[in-house]
Length: 320
Image 1 (spheres, rainbow, N blue to C red):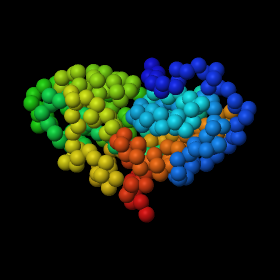
Image 2: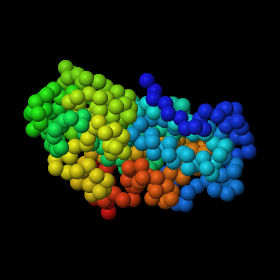
Image 3: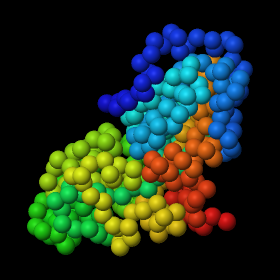
């Protein structure tokens, strides 16, 4: 089910938000924007009016909502309808045109049925997200190995005593199929190993927020979320992996290897009625002002801070 969380402006009458398209000076989204000063000031900002749809990955939905609130201060006649649903929904929505911005934790190449669906897509990599395992606060371990995580998430390890904890059933809470967070976690942890068909987690949920709620409420549970959800509930705690603490600094250096780009996909052939708003919002989030403030405050990492990079096949190499 789609998990929708619209900003306060999404509740305004859409008729007012859809007005004045004909008067816009419109620009296409044919290339990824360069970071610069925050977009949306002066006469150009006053001209922007209308609604765009931005949906997909829930891992950085709170970031997008925070940035949108700042964007509205300079663009009061714009509405950005922000919804969740996961990376799969973000990619399918930008492909079929129901979204102007499709959010994803993974490259679109990993989600489309055939390469022809990539035509016209523009990959705006707006920041980096670190992800890692979380457990119910009652679980008495603080560190886990990648091999142990693999065993847990394939059903080979089922009791906490097998990984150094007090005896008790391990309750796995997974993200649903199509989740970019799940794809990122499984790529780093399972490393290509297939999950047995007879392995069934206690739950599969559709958003990171729901993961946190269920792990906090379920004794002996384990799951995974983006770093920005670590402080969301006192009933959970994050685990070190292979002795490495899940911090932004360790992601930047490449020492902690569960991370992903946060993609905001747009279209180079977007309808002119919305293209100017989409471009302005992408330029705004990519600006130095936003990258150095809200992106970091929300628990994400500017791409420019990374000392390593990752390609679509998962290969990690130093930034030259």
